Length: 425
Image 1 (cartoon, rainbow, N blue to C red):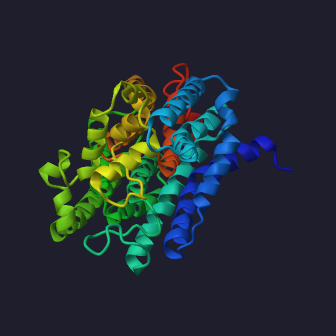
Image 2 (image 1 turned 90 degrees about the vertical axis):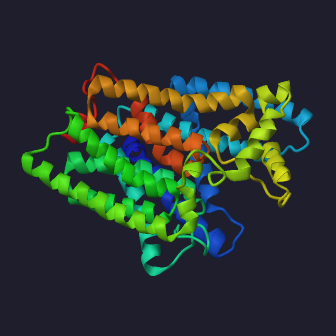
Image 3 (image 1 turned 180 degrees about the vertical axis):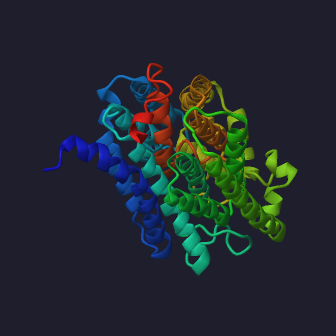
């Protein structure tokens, strides 16, 4: 007979993490290819949210106080939006705040079972997530099955994933974990996974996927050269093999990226200095509209925001496009301040930055590759959030990033260099 705790701690992470990429893929196929107005992804994540939400309140932690504070502010803000805003939709607001809380709901569940969860299996769940996502994109690229990332006018295929930016960020985070497992576990499967995920990021065709995948390899490679990580023991032969493998990935990946950028004007425009510094090729009029709405806000709107629904409608009105659709600034800082104001929005924006600072402290205390990888993950997440959006309110990203949050909050200075070693042995 299967033990209930074993079922929860070993099978739930498998259902939550790799399951999310599978259902996202299936959801895109149903909605875009079959043209059915049914979201199996919303149903899947709705069930997870409802089942796991009690764990936010079960054990007091920073996430418990965060959850209570957010709900309290959200209730007050809704009264303000109902009274002051031209556009208001309570059901939509509930849906969007649930997306933002999804990360902390999963993290709370993992922290509740922190002493029972097999940490190595948890990392394997992340690696499987990346292998499924990257594998789907590579398969679509080879056989020409799936959806173009940017239509016919540029390079890139996203298989059946509905949101390419969310997919690229989640794959980059999973690539970090796979490279760590590759270096410490030295299993052939992780070499394969790393190549598949890197190829998937490049073939996806997003700027984050193309540049981020190669930069991650380069940063870890440089880190291995300049730091002596306590949890990384490589023989001379292993170091040589690793050097040639990483060098091969960087060389082949760099060659493909060079050809992609130079042969596709749309992507080339995205890598110009103006675009990289946030010019019109970055988020264009969406960011400009969002910034204008925030700058024109009155005192109450500055503190409580306009609400997700009103803010998204107003962006469309400024752009004079389809008024029945909703648009976002696609930069998390603008979307959260414009929607939720400086208090609630600022709180959402602050917490990942706090995690980043803690991960930095943990790395300098432990001098381990594991926390070096976590630190890079938080840099990638926070950077993508402030520069390209699609981080804080993306359920598929939250499925992977919750593991990073879990290990940061689970940190115990009494178990140095880190308790994860027991899972490897």
